[in-house]
Image (tube, rainbow, N blue to C red; front, side, top):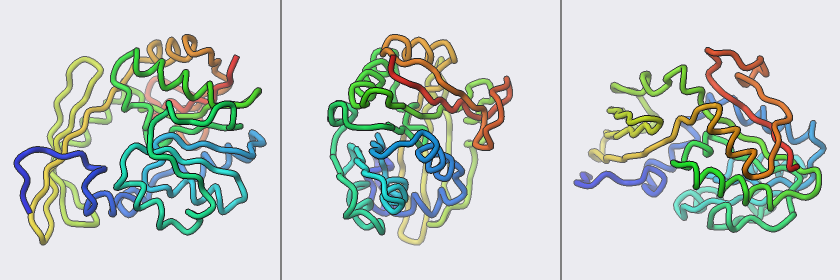
Length: 239
């Protein structure tokens, strides 16, 4: 199967279905599960829930969970997760988060990098803050731009469905990668743009949305933020 126009990865069923398998080494799931316990959360909203894996894990541990996801293909996969029936699923964006409902709002899987300008960034943070109950928290991560993770994306890599060849283009703090996926059925091409914001951009958005930084870590092992830290992991609180 070949396509002439690059597609959205998350809208291609054959690719989206392999997301969890291709991401099985991810370290953020256990981190956020532990964070939910430590913050004493009872109600958790996952913004950009994707395949619903984290929502399912949270529901399995007894949390009341709402998963918000704009892409129907991903929601269809989420419906097959083990504890999907215990999760409230919303097809939509941050604007659709329930008002003053959550003790903890999460943006995992680098969802925070899909907001490509300052306006979009402040808007999602504002809606996340609106969804929090008094004393609630927002947690998310972005890749540290100084580490230039996109340089490791270029080239051909193995996946659970064959191979993917990636090319990368950078313009200011935006990085666009075009990926050609090859397996026994042919090739598919997808394209995606992510923002690698500066520290000042991230924190200015938080301030504008009325959120303060409680803690910040540089990696999933909770090491402090350093210049070479691969991640900036934020735990914030509504003012």
